[in-house]
Length: 95
Image (tube, rainbow, N blue to C red):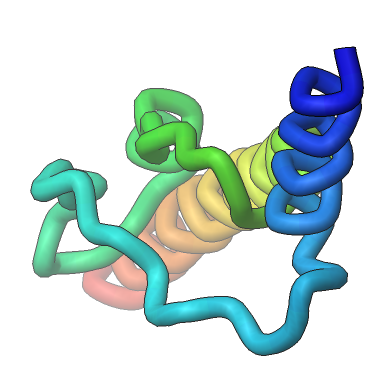
């Protein structure tokens, strides 16, 4: 029984990072795939990151990625509107 409690304590200490300095993170070989020519809202929505024992809280990362996706969507829509308006003005100027 004492060995089980000691093992639980040790795992808790190591998992929470209270056992001293942590070693370098282990790489799982999976890299997120993002386009080289710019990241859009759809790219961010499709992004999947590897899950590790230690790292950032997934709920917070998901919240930030959702917020960034919404912001990218708004900017893409506004850019499209402005480009359409510019094309309209250029067409009028040619007449």
